[in-house]
Length: 561
Image (cartoon, rainbow, N blue to C red):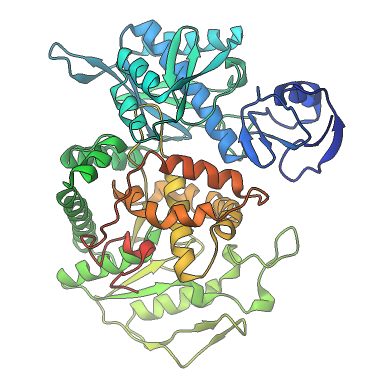
């Protein structure tokens, strides 16, 4: 039997003769020396499959390491089930709550039932943390199989009830009646994950486990560097922002996606939406008060794609006006150098995300002139001609007015190197954390941003979902270079997520994702996102969503459009 085999993204497909029933794992073992990194999954005819998938007919097979999003999630899931198994062995009956991404890893809390039968957090000692870590290492060395067992939906719910994983069986209730549910078993411990696992524990051998504040931190390689664990940097400001969001969730009475689904099913969701918006308003007020109290005049706003930067900036400006401060909003796109001066990347293409694509001397000169009360002829960049035009935006601000600057280089010191540091206030915004499906199945915030962008690009740019997904890796690469390394410099963090937004985005995103065909490269990722939406009940009533909501930036109807 002939298949076409590729050893990874960008690698050519070659013809290879195999016996029917050969697995993707067999191919990996045979070709391992030619693979730069450990393989975690395979794309079979453009559909993600676990490595133990048997190949029974001619097909196209691409082996995937963690540079692929789904292979990365498989690596994380494998680490999670090992951590849960180890924690339950070392600490006896405990509940492991995987909360969010933090410090190039996963932040985890350990819970235990109290006398009343409710879960409460327990502190894990340094010694117990080390014992859990070494137990995990022993599991890796034994290379224990992680077996997938398939059950009917009814049987799976009974099984999960029996082991006390209540929030997991609540998720399954939203699946079709005839759905087959995959339960994974590792050395006697069974659990449910909606994504795939590695075939055995030996596949996820790169990790660190450390005690971190009120929980544990399990660190692992990044997708950009699959062969090493990044150097540790304590993102304590990010941790504080995430802790604040957990407090907000408590106020909302929401812990998992199933809680939101239940609210929608009962019709009791309007207060949840209004309270979520009120919490956003409260945070914007706090940040505006910080800026005014500190006497700052230059507000720098940084965040990755689809964070809601525009809406946040407009809401902040209004709140600064409430505090008696007028602001001038400036996007950096009007300060591009002339097109023929734009730097090029390694492929000879113009790189508009390079900091040198901006006319930095002109930007710094005009910002200082504005702060000094001078009248400035600010450029307007003509994207058709590739040149700056003048005479259209002659501007002056008063001596106590503020300048609000938003752009992908907002925190880069080169952008504002000519401005007095004491005048700057830096705000990092992003969907920092999202309500998870359950204690072990996360909804990555990168998924939230990708879905936001798919929906917005559809109505604002007439882009298909495939077009948006095709460009997404380039967007992410730019963020890794220009945005995420600077996040720790923020004076304030703003979490732009709304706990219910997956429910609102569903009716917009699902039809767009369903259009992507099996022969398109983006099909596998579209299928993963569609699978995620199966656990989300659609919230079709958008009338309650305020016109100044960050969510309006993506679904339309914003007062700021």
